[in-house]
Length: 561
Image (cartoon, rainbow, N blue to C red; front, side, top):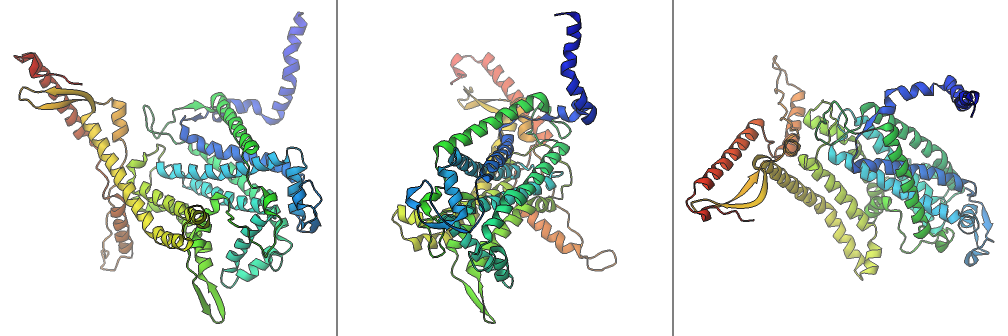
């Protein structure tokens, strides 16, 4: 190669890059600190990534499906490849879904990958949210980001419901019929809202087109905006990390965003894409051709919604048939309470929990280190009790399948679940809190007395003791570093002028809630206790060593493993 060609070779590559950089400033971007942003490495942090990459897969497969799906409720006669349904009258939406499944190349694969990715998306968000709650990652300054994550979960559930309602088969139509009943149960405005949503009397002609616009445009747009805000706040606040050597509230120990974290995240995306593709290829989900077109006079036997709707399904099935007549109007408490009020209350509690705990503790400090769930016993127990509610309602939502498969009485299952939904969560709360407190006591003992070496020593008096060795400073710090909160001071009942203090009642309420939440916590090990325990352990070991050396008979101090 000539000298001139060597000079020109880099220019042929750098020319377009320089042109782009002059107009976008990408070169300067590489020098900025956010490309060297440090991210900690722990398996639990990948839960959020699973949700993110599942959402990307949903967008990709969803674009493919929009080319062939027809969001219309116009009646057509089916003449497609599925012989068992030929000649039947059905909506254009259902007919196009069958065409995608049987006549479009890779259509069924894309449908099933899309559905599995939706289920994985919501599951990952839910588990990610549990991780945030269990570890205290929602504390200041991440309250807003927690609220954004909660809204993402709610929108994801709504997006999933809209998506599996689009095919207009008998199963999805049954779900829409239930949704229509929930809307109608709202006093005063329910009937008008139902007519507006469905374009008239159920099933109407407008619901599928409107759901389609929600599913491919409005809700995805909101999801993309909230995901972007979620990631921006994650960058701004920096990532939380587990306590460990060199990790404080002022730093992050991990790997830089570019190139290490980027390479890992990219590889993780392809793993998730591969797994969902494998599931879509091998595991059947939502075979709409088995259900047939929707008919308002029919209901699918043994119909079950996607798993994330189990809470509403279970509530509806175990609720007694309570109704009230008021001025000639019927209030359907058996639908309104379980289908509208109860889910709203549960989501509101989950949404406001960071602010509720902050009010109880009065803690306004910033927190970037995560908590071990055992070190927040009441919070951990409360979350487990909510999980118990969800699990029981999920179980109740399949009471007909359980009765059929296990040859049990359906009514007795329903009555049993009505009782268990009230006694199960408190039992789960008590058991979980006892377990956490027991683990706290075990950590305290381990920090003070070290770990058991398995060496049994016999003293001259004949007493047997097990030798303990002190923990490493890193392990000790991990066990004793968790923070505890002081009981809030009570406001005086009257001020200095003898006037009743309105803050006194709130102060007493807060103090009682604090006592219920934190009074049973095991006291953390103080520095003085730790130094005394270590000096005692060292002295005890030295004394044992002296006895060994001064023993008249070798058998007086025998190690036994």
